[in-house]
Image (cartoon, rainbow, N blue to C red; front, side, top):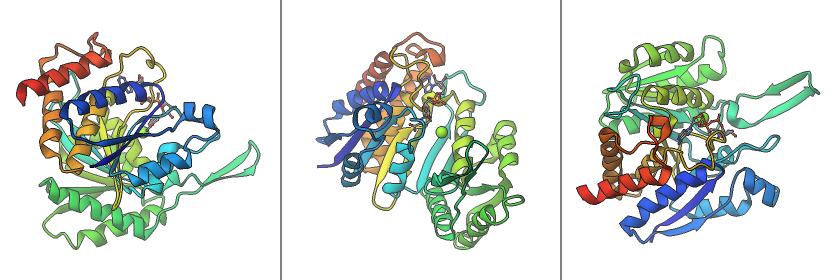
Length: 334
Ligand code: NAI
Ligand code: MG
């Protein structure tokens, strides 16, 4: 029996997690679900944004489903901590257009692979002079850079893709991003059949908007990956449709790219598709390919029909109505 950790978090994290559970329950997969706390509400209750118990539950699970959290000023980020604790170094973010969705590009299909354990997300900051001067350390190691590039090439082969682009800023950050770029080409030598190139991250951001069809797989460090994945999600219908997987050698955690969206939380109008597609990615990781494909197909079909849409997509449906439309579609096509 597979053990699944469930961390709904805050705000719309809880709403979309309910939608995911609703669809998962239909399949009757006999998973052993274990709920765990993280985030702002958790901090108010327990004094920590990420209790040891949550890390333990997640580590013991075959996979974790994570909703979204609201950040707590002055406290460490629970999701960044979890990714590090679980050593889920590869953050996989597919950017794929949806038929029927009103968006900027309707024919995109590339993936962003973001290094998940270091860079500026090392959360290593120091006050030099109170309110005057502070430092954030950007840590880049050869080991983690080669590991993420290796992950990117393997994923390229797995998905029958052909080109990997490294995005960095080695012209300015000569040491840190220099190591990243160097590692990329070292690893690339082992994959002679895959085309490679690299761009500076600012140029990459431009091309993502002006000429995104040139991309197949983009591999980049932590902060750049965070920024370009929101940017890219904006091209194919927004954050409500963007799923992700955090994958390591022992653990995996799946979550929508979006946050807790306090501006719409509590009204049950959040779009559950990003969470449902993240759930589909989890099922695929756990080798439940049939169920994984069914969920993705049903999400796409409901969007294509365009009858049941949440307000971010121009409709008036509630979170559970869209989730229910997906489930009805699963029943129809199964
Ligand atoms: P956000 O992703 O929560 O929201 C950005 C915008 O997208 C908002 O206008 C929101 O309404 C909309 N949006 C996001 N997801 C949506 C969905 N499923 N359906 C419909 N609309 C959706 O980012 P924001 O506002 O910058 O951050 C809010 C909080 O979330 C902050 O405390 C932030 O630190 C946290 N956050 C947490 C993340 C995580 O848990 N992994 C990731 C990003 C932010
Ligand atoms: Mg982000």
